[in-house]
Length: 467
Ligand SMILES: [Fe+2]
Image 1 (cartoon, rainbow, N blue to C red):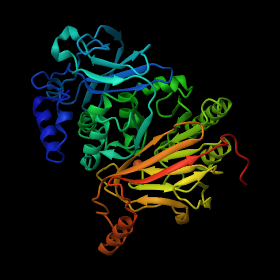
Image 2: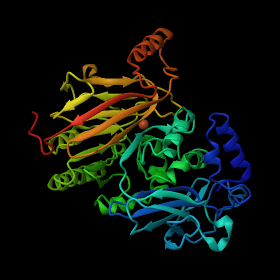
Image 3: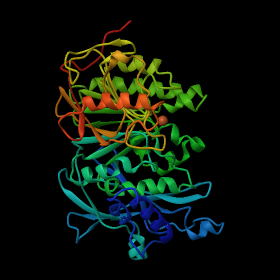
Image 4: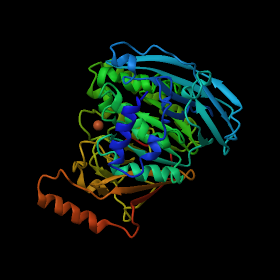
């Protein structure tokens, strides 16, 4: 929970950065903030038509913890929902799991909801109404059913969060996207400040996290305590892992209309010497791709989500790359490098160029896209893929991507620039100017969407050996 003092600090601090943060501050109601008040409210599909809603009670900021004690109250876990805001007539019950790390001390509540009708707007509040108003959240709403347009980014943290926050909140409020995929490096870091950093990050994004599905992939910034904040805060992802037979929220897969998402944990290479875990994920990856290929008529696109793409540091992508190529992964979207890059289809230095860099028709290889620049304390990076002729488009600037998969043959991609403050960490002024001019010459007539791509594939499926 947030004490009032901290709520004010958060609100005022962010307000100084952006003008739209009032929506996030209002996520916690003035005068009713206690350790029983739900925070960190978010939800996501499980993959079987159900949703899991998750929130926390308690926190490092609770008075008990400040005094050297620990958070001990565990309110009951409920969601009250319905199709009318004035009549939340349905109730579902869930469970709470205590999570303690350093001075962070919370219950993480999960409650699964089944049987919602696609296309229907539902209103809900989470918490324990037996505790009175302080025990439940404000009322949010969302529309059940498959996400049509996903927003996607990695590497989003509290510092420089304002570079994209106003755009993300406004685009979310106006339904310019329907769900968010966050491919690792979250809050910078979830555990910092005894977990307050993670709570503040989720509070700022709560207007969209509580109203649109939000899914996570782990990055290197989640490594603290063997990924303990990721594994505990986001333990609801285990349900997806269980369903997709990975039995972990660190890597998982899910069917969506016309596509199969596969999410992998690139950090098993960077932070574990445990080869058994690497092999376990690799075996699961191949088994998942074999199954996906048997159902390709219904889910033709295979979209791979990961924190790092195949040239990025500390990751040995050799085996992943070979399997992804063999089993026909169409697209890999990652973060880690703090910029935007969209590559031509290719496999390492083997590049398949197209005359129109915005339209790839029946490529023979996957297409990699980096979306690592919504904003973080490390600012913008000028690091690009080592095979320069393989880069179809890039912007060393802040922004995020979106995609739709309208049918079996088309994948439509856009990248929206959210802030023009670019290259603050260029090696020299000359370098910054040169890059700025290069970017300026690429600006389209559209004021915000700077890059578009249509990927057309009539021949999804296994690929021949590329040796
Ligand atoms: Fe990273």
